[in-house]
Length: 264
Image (cartoon, rainbow, N blue to C red; front, top):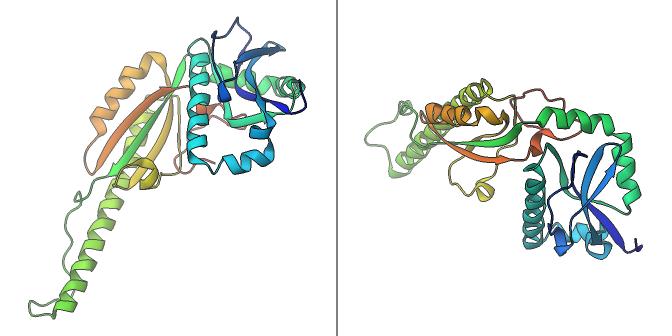
């Protein structure tokens, strides 16, 4: 391989036959399979002028570039995951040579094997819950408020009351979101709660109170979706997305235990 070329890694599976044919990876490069020690890595050749360390620092700030790269990465991972248990790797994981990928498969073979066993016959589902304004009971007005208060004082009282109402809505929604998570965990194998997204990222005006990822047995997917229908409402709206390859449960340092709170 030329010194100005690197290797972009998408996912790792067990070596159980050929992968999907004709896949185009990032920058349009064909995806190929590298096998070693009973594992298979799916990768493509990339230019280090675009995917080298310095170039990536600049490119990761280009939202159009990042969106296109993420979309392509996801498409390749999903195509592989449709065939067999798959451990996706992080976006823009780039090595300078195939020898480094072989070293990865060799040194972390047992960890990959454990991850692939964990995700076999399972898919990841995402659940997002948002606080619904107006869900809480109105609180009493401030002490000392009088009908003949000055316009300025009346305005401040209204602002305080509105703030208390929003805070009450959020607290109620957060408690409801915890109940939603617990109900989903009765069906899911494992769940993780990621950091709530900012409204600019979520595309919703409401405050997100749950950004959960759940690993669910394929034969319980319908049951999982039914739980969503049963627990929606009561101060929150709930959104189900997926299924996907198990991005949230394929990290090599993952212990596989459920957690409620920010996932590292």
